Length: 331
Ligand SMILES: Nc1ncnc2c1ncn2[C@@H]1O[C@H](COP(=O)(O)OP(=O)(O)OP(=O)(O)O)[C@@H](O)[C@H]1O
Ligand SMILES: [Mg+2]
Image (cartoon, rainbow, N blue to C red; front, side, top):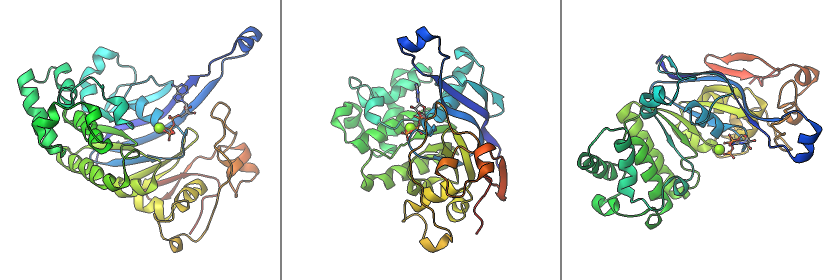
């Protein structure tokens, strides 16, 4: 088995909730949104781990915390064997280059006043990895590599001259120009036309092979996770409820939540592959005061007293496939 490039141990991120005047005057205690609440996982070298789950379950927060773009509240982040949780900005610099993020909204993450070529060259220059002339040459090569040709024409264009798919290619080029070892891709194809998705996924896949890249691929779309991921981690309300090899998790999910997510997208797995059927109702509860016991119990058709009282530990459901549930689905 490959070694881990990223290892996360009991990671937490709580955001303080803004208090109104009345709460402050009453001296009410500070409340927190428990965006991630004690998650552990690893991403192995050369592997793509997809992080899936409904809106608000903590996927983006996880991506930002592991790259140290925001500070964790608790827990450990280990990158290639080094604990980077407490490193200061200066100490983090060499790691910043090795870990990159591809953002969800390419329009928002590109400066409207910066030419495409300059935007892609920027990371090379701030890390002092190339002179201006060298950077330009590398950028032209990269533009060609990501399919933005004629490359010298694209070099001088501004983001608003590009389509959504082309802008996403620019964002990928900017992340890849540093030859990172680990990338967090946050909903990298969600805003792109379905017809363009496959080619962007292929582009990411080609970098994965060329650089032996490891990826944390955040998506709410199971069909996309199925296409790109080696393993899948399922998040619910700040926790990972199931993790395992992609095919295993999709065909043989152990957590009722995972099964419901998969069955909500009929194209992903044929109906006959799952013996049980499940539909969940209701909304994701508030992350400020999540339900006690198993967080999923208010929406779970199998919940009993134990689920209401006790948080489930992970069980190894199949080899390398873990489920946190008191009543995992069998067969
Ligand atoms: N800076 C912040 N301040 C306060 N709360 C935040 C902040 N960022 C995220 N949250 C809250 O943390 C929780 C998790 O948010 P996050 O963006 O990680 O979810 P997500 O799984 O990426 O959702 P989506 O699929 O909609 O992108 C949400 O309740 C969100 O409102
Ligand atoms: Mg998100």
